Image 1 (tube, rainbow, N blue to C red):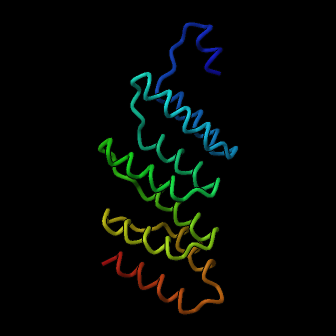
Image 2: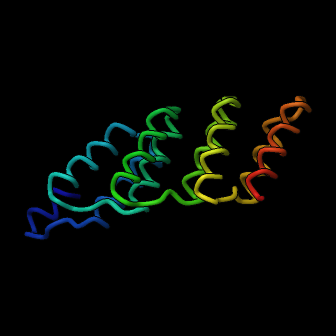
Image 3: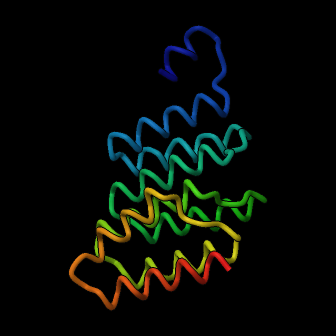
Length: 148
C-alpha cells in the first residue's frame, strides 16, 4: 500500500499508518506494527490514541504483555492518556494467558487513571476465575476499589 501511495505521489498520514498497524494487529504481526510506528516517527507523524490502541492490540494478541505495557509508557511520554479500550485489551490478554498477578496490576493502573473496565471485560474476568473463588473475590474487590 505504501509503495502504491508513493508511486502515486501521495504521502501517507497518521491515519494511513494507524490503519496499517490495525491490520498488523488483526494478523498478529507485532514486529511489523512496531516497524510502522518507527516509520511514522521518522516521518514526524504523531501517533494518536487509536494508533497506540492498535499497537497494544497487536502486543496482546501476540502474548507480549510486557511490550504492551511499554506502549502505555510511550503514550504517556507523548502526553496521551490510555483509555478504557486499551486497558480492556490488557485485561483480556491477562485473562487469556492466566496472568492474574499482572491483571491486578493492570486494574490498579486503571484506578490511577480513574477508569473502569467495560461490562465485557468484567465478564471476561469472571470467566477467567471460574473455579477459583478466592481469586474471583479478590478481582471483584479490586474492581469495587476502582469504583470508589
